Structure formats: structure tokens, C-alpha cells
Length: 524
Image (cartoon, rainbow, N blue to C red; front, side, top):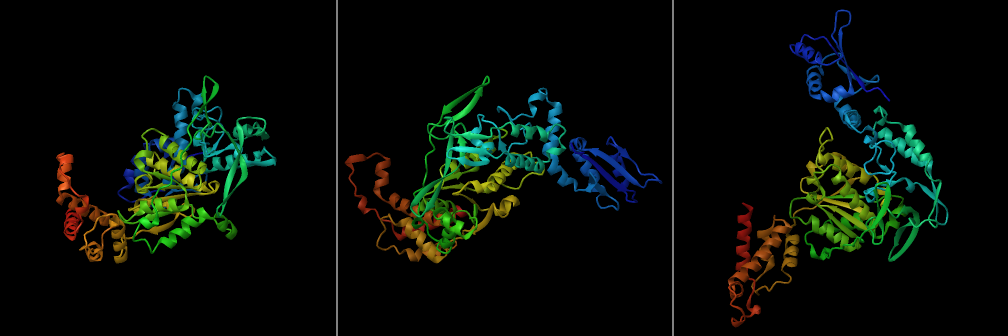
């Protein structure tokens, strides 16, 4: 275990705040005040005490941070306390929970697992088949290659490298209970190879390659049937009283929206950009492979409310015949610890299973805003999980992540770096031609009066959003219906005896005028 004791030094000062600083520092267990022979004040602070009394430490640091000779070091390396807190918060907190735990033997185990790697924080690579098996990001048996048809040779060296890297990234060396040697010994106990012909629980996993209209399948690995709990006739593994059981689940249904680009107006200036960046990789991934480049896995639509961001995402899915997965914050986030992250992993798992797929986060700012410093909030854990999933998108051959927001400044900065939502498309309010096109689409099935000239309405609608224009068209139709006897007769159930002709109902310019007035009233 590496030492996590901070060494905090600050010199004497003539500042009026010096006495306050000494008073705060004296509250800690290992503080040595400066003397004539030793002009520096020294505070040795174990990480556990630092986390427990972070507020007092922050007060002290804010008083002396600008003074000459002030420094905070860890193992001889100068650090910033705030960065230290973020980096080691999870490890120190987990170690503290271990000391307070009644059942210490199970504290470091992954809940509900048969066996893990000896640390619950070492969880990027799944070792077990548990009730949450379908949520795994990556399994140990995904590392390897086919030595012959249907026989998969496990690459243990690669697994060990993966675990070492994860342990380093998560600073597990600073945990007094963690043993990397134990984790590597578990890897040595894994099977050397898996013969899919010899067991009903193992199968070859194929990847679909799209070459125009032709689809070919290439073997890319193996998987355990117990980890595919969302396919028809497939099993999810559960354990009760030490006995493994499997249950069959229903097949995921593909969903392709019926919205096309013909149903959306006002986007002529960006439609080529959308096709190039999003459609081309899904329709012809071989083009990107030939060019030796990776397609953008995350694309962000941003713009004012009502500009058609959601409709555009649906139209893209329709054009590419991709499985469309709409995601909204309220149905994804949960108050229960870990459930929000599990829901998110399940969404990505389903997208990979039914690729080509598009995952669409509607109003992503409601679920992925700036994270709290201590990482304790639900949205912080959710954003961390989303970042991890998007970093692992290389294994998702034909999956694209789209997101929309009208408040891009609220998003966590880490989401916008290259490799995540690195391509951004602004969806603007429609211009004159766009307004007319949206109005034509919204009224194409309406019985318009001969007097109606849609082009004359455009100046009144210019500056509004697509949703505003659709509202005016719908409200005009409702106004025409109110003027007729049809609505009154239906409402008052005058019924069959009161004959009327639907053909006599026409939407006129006066209806549009009243609708525009209603729009302005709603905008106040």
C-alpha cells in the first residue's frame, strides 16, 4: 500500500489571519508549530483524517494558500488538495467503510457475484455471471482469439494488463486491503480455452458487416448465453443458495421511427452535414475503414426549444433503418444506488445487440450536467458511467450516440472532448424558406380555403421555431372546427339526426390570424 499521508507546510506570517490559521491547524492530530529553529509549520495529515475533516482543512488552506512557503505534498510530489480529493475520494471512502463494516469478509466482494477480482472497485471487467450479467461492460472471455473453428483461446496476458491499468487508474494501490497479486492469481485460474461445441452455454458471437445492401457475418468472439438476458430463448444467470439457475427473457423489438426528412422543414442548410457525419458511417462503414478513420460516435444537436432536434434524430434512424432508442432523464435516473448506471449499461447493451442502432439522449443536460466535486451525487455517478461507456465505443461497430440540448453550457466538459460528443450541430430557427416549408408540411392534409396564401403568413411567423409554426397550423384548424356546427353537434350528442357535411369546413385566413394571436398570447 502506498502512503496517503499529506504533508502540509506553511511559514510564519505577519498577516492578521496567521493566528486563525494556527488555531485551525492545532485542531488536527499531528501538527507541529513553527519555532525560531524551525520556521515552518508542519501538518501531517492521513488521508482518512483529511476526508473526515475536509471543511476545516479547506478553511486552513484558503487562509495560507497565498503565503510564501505554503505547500502540500504526497510522497514527495506537490499536489493541489482539491485534485487529491477527487482522485482518492472513492478509495479512501471505501477503505473507511471496510473498517466500519460488520461483515468485513464480504465488503470487498461484488454484490451477488460468484467471484470477483478481490475488490469491488475493480469492476470494469466482469468476472462473474450474476443477476446483473446483462449489464456488463466487458467480460474476461472477450480477450482472446480463435485457435480453430469454435475454439476460443483466452488471452490471459491481456486480461492481466487490463486489470493492472484499471487498478492504476482507480488508485487502488492506496487501499490497504487491495492485492493486485490476488487479482492476477485469479486470472491464472481461468480456463486456457473454451470450446463452444462442447457446451450448450457458450456460442460464437458474430458481427454484421454492411456492404451496400449485402450483409455478411464475421466471427469476432464468444459469449456465454447467461449474459444475453434480453434475447428470446436466452438465459440470464441467477444464484440462490449457491445454485445457478437461468430464466428465459423476451426478445428486444427493433424500433424504427416513421419520421422522414420530408416531414421536417427548415433544415436544408444542415441536411448534407447530417448525412455525411451520421448516415454514411451507419450505411457504409466500409468507407470509413477504407479511409483508415473512426466515425464520430457521439453527435450533439443544440439549439433553441422547438427547432426539431428530436424529429431530426428520428428521421436519421428512419433513413438508416437503425434501431432507435430514445432516452429521457426521468425514466433513466433512479434514487437507488447504482440503478441509474445499470439502466444506462442496459441501454448500450441493447444497442449493441440490435445494431445498427442509434441511442438518442433527449435534453441530455437534465441528466449529464456538471458533476459535483465529491462524486457523491447521482448525476455524478451517471456521468462517470456515460463517459466510460462512450470511451468503450470501439466495440460497438454500428452504434451512434445522438443527444440534444438547448442549454449546452450546462453539460459536463468531459462529455464534449474528442472521442465523446466531439461533433456538434446547431439547429437554428428556420429562415423564410424554412418557415414556408414547415407551414406547407403542417397543412398538407388540411382543407384550406381558396383564399389562403401560406406565403403571406411567413412574415408573421419569421423568428419563431418549428414548433411555433406547427402550433399555428393546428390552432387554425381547431378554430375552423369551432366555427362550424360539427363540433357543437358532436359535443352535445345531437348525433345522427343532425346531418352535416365535413366538406363544408375550410380553414381560412381569419383562422390563421386568430391562431397567430393565440401564439403571441402564449408567448407572454
